[in-house]
Image 1 (cartoon, one colour):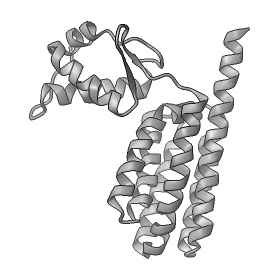
Image 2 (image 1 turned 45 degrees about the vertical axis):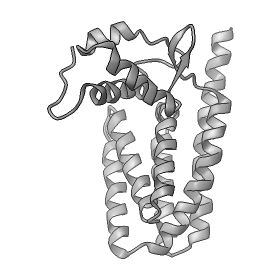
Image 3 (image 1 turned 135 degrees about the vertical axis):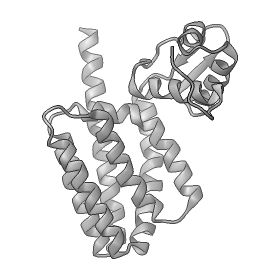
Length: 226
């Protein structure tokens, strides 16, 4: 049974836990969610569970079915394409705007974030959660420099929908090191105030991620069909 933290409502706690289970894959794509089991495990009634699932459905992380209950939203090539189509456009814009606002102090902070990622990548056993968090911190710091709250809120939501796909990327050999090299180059372009070039490079960075994830998904599907 999970203890509800002080000053957090039951609904907020259940939402936070369920969301983490979905994003981490503990609740697998396509899996049916047993609401009674969730309520028992978390020590709450079904009401906060239903409320949490409604919020997750609004974020496209679960699907509500009239007669089949609730399932985790499946991963699909079309969903991946839809997410990255919007992400590339919005994040490219954010990088362009951020480059215009970039200060030497920002560059120092970004290089420190890259160093942190390098240290995490150097460990023999990769800490997936720590790497995901460090990667998100790096990107969100850049997008935040654009100083466009509406743009930022949309990007953050898309990142949450993308997290299950990014986990696929992390298990591929050499992808963490490759991503770090691209992070360094992005910061170099931004430091030189090459806003359009930085924007284009960020889009290439995202599309490369999409391409690798799609390839892995297709290979997994082919293996299951054999």
